[in-house]
Image (cartoon, rainbow over all chains, first blue to last red; front, side, top):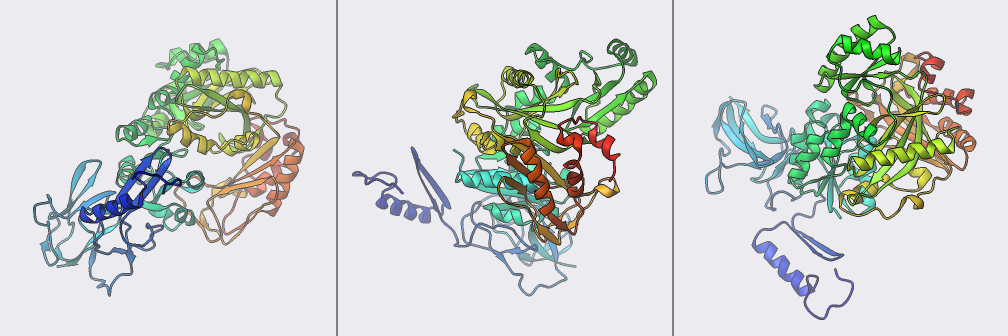
Length: 163
Length: 449
């Protein structure tokens, strides 16, 4: 926040900040950075959990309402896990998309039948989209990442009940 | 200034960069392989992203994943550390094309200087003495033999795309030259995807003296004086120090001036090191430029008071150097011991595993750069460096005494380390008198205990 009192509304004025927060909520923005010379302010919206530090054992990513990309990933303990379920993991780092286009349906929903070639999602890295096949036959039991979420290598994307 | 930086490296240098960023109020994103999962230093970054399985080729060298991680975490810049992608000009260019600054030199300069043969040409043009060598790549045996007979044996066969001590072999006669050439070519092709080789006169028992340079994007170049890294085993440095002991002032000034000249002529910016060999008559010869921050950079930091990683970041962000050459004063003596997870009693066999006891040294004049700690598991997949132990004192004599004390205090159990070999070095009169060269370790310790 600005150190000096400013007579006119500048970017670091309380009213402006209030308005920015309102706009962030309305347009579902996760982060706004402002800079005016040497003054800087960052507004970040999301859960109050800290940005993921060191993930421990592969954790399920909770579905969340927060905005994509910079939203902190919540590592939660696995629910009563069925050890029969097979993890479908990410082979790359990027952004996870559950649907082929924003106006289309999800590739798969919970309960969908898949075979190894079924495209279950796509992962985008550096503006290149990679279709991800399921790699297994079975039924989708869990979808572990939100559309637009960031995924790292080996992160669990889906859990499939094998058939 | 950058708001967020991704560190495309691991271990002690990753921690070094994380610290520099935090000191500057810059957020950090660390990347890690599954072999490094759970490493305590990762928790010191603001965020850590898994980029692949243990083998470096599938993780730390997977530039697509690193850039993807950088893109999605919205970083302004990537610091490559040393090794891995730090001297990969294509990677540097790719980062910049993606609007992510690469904290290092311009990729063109990196390409020029990264090719050893090209670097030699640049050096000659900048009136920097070079080791007598074949003018260009060797394409057939006749050429090689002609050169060897001209400069006299022994000669050194060097891979043009090599570096860090790799891709070199000595030939002492015609037979070993011919057989050595084909082996060197094969090895170079396998290791660097470039089988081109050239020849140099092999200097017997030279000293390895290198100059730390720093340059900004406005063309200002300074040097932070020299380091002597003669203590090596199989071309891997064990001990580094500054100033170079028993080096006449005039020679040192000339070496530093030559380094600055070369780097300026290449249009270089960021931190870098120019390496020279110094023969028994104190003639110096350029061998190569390391276009990155180096393992032993803290030695120069201690004797000049300049934080090199911080300056790299500032330069990359477009800031000018705040000091001129005259502002950089060399004070005292600094020595670094590289503590590796290796067993000196078993031919330096790597010794990965869990550290069950970690009692680091301390006290005035002692600096320890390490990512390791009690309970840390040293993975088997990477180089074996676990810690850099440095001492800084007004004189070399005092520095040696403090290093002996620090080595004595340093207790590590669960893995083997090279601490015992360092203790031997610091009690060897030739070292204490500053009379060492690059063959010293092998001669004195016969490649073992």
